[in-house]
Structures are given as C-alpha cells and as structure tokens.
Image (cartoon, rainbow, N blue to C red; front, side):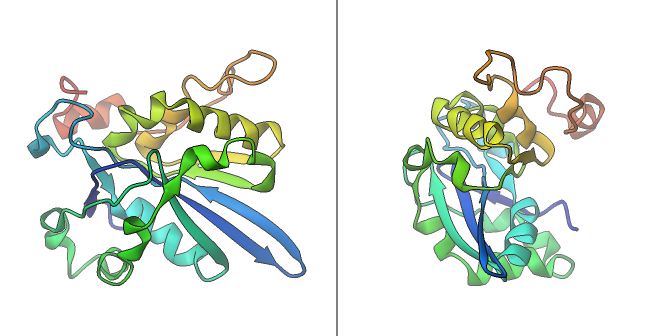
Length: 202
C-alpha cells in the first residue's frame, strides 16, 4: 500500500458502510478523518490538515464491492482535495489516484456524525483511518465519542489506522472506565514523528 498520497479536506469526514452478507444484514462504520483549515492554527505547508488518502481509499475500494456506503462529517461537509499532495505517486498508487479521479461524490455529499449517535448497535465495525487532522477535532468531538462507545458496548469492533487511534483517548464506557484502559494500542510512533520533523508542531 502506498503511504505518501494524501487528501486535504476542509472539514472532518466519516464513512459508514452497510455490508450485506448472505441473508444476514451486517452494517459497518468507517470514519474518514480530515480537518478544516481553521482547526489547528498551523500553516497548511506542514500538511497538518491532510488525511492519508491511501488509508481511506484502499479499504473503501475493497469494501465498496460488498457495501452500501454513506459518507458523513462533523457538520455535513464538502471536502476539498489537494491534488498537489498526490501527484508524485501517480505512477505507483493507482488505487488512490483512481479513487480521487472517479469517486469525488464520496466527500462532496455528506451527512452528520451526530445523526448516528445512539445507533452503534446497528453497526459491526468502526474504523478511523489516519492523518494528522484526527489529532485536533475528531478526538475532541463528543458525538464521535458517543458513537465509538455505542459500537463497542454493543459488542462490536472499534479500530483505527495510524494517527486515527487518537479518537479513542477520551472515550469512556458505561462503567466509567476508559475504552483503552489496560489495552495495547498501535499507532504512529514518536520516533516516526521525529523523522517526519513534526514532533514540535504536534
């Protein structure tokens, strides 16, 4: 999987997938994370507003073959794509580039995360792709915290990719314990952040 193709968005976006397996309907939730330019107060040149497109495009491309997909956001948004951030991977990351070229409607028509609060039991998985944006607004969004808790408390799976794990940091369960308490968590390491030259900014 390519890791250098990135998507810049003007709002945070999430994706909910409904999967139909045999005669049993199973619904899947996937979050697509981006950030509005006013969120972090850091120059766009640092790419803090970018979602790694590969972390969304690849699972979306695979799951869309068996899923009914609805894209949602914090406020209902029309996200913008920074084509310059992916031009250098045009010959190597065909999945991400095909996604950007052919699936624009995915991030230009979205509903709100808040519309799904209380419906966690209807889904079997919630997964948040990475990107620095998740550090600034989704991680603090109470509606997303509630949705994550609802999915988990219903006995379903919650997962995240890379920086996306930050959305779990303040999620409390009904027993008032943190979701990640006493659990191993994987994500983007401090060493990797140092190599990226963004530790002091983040």
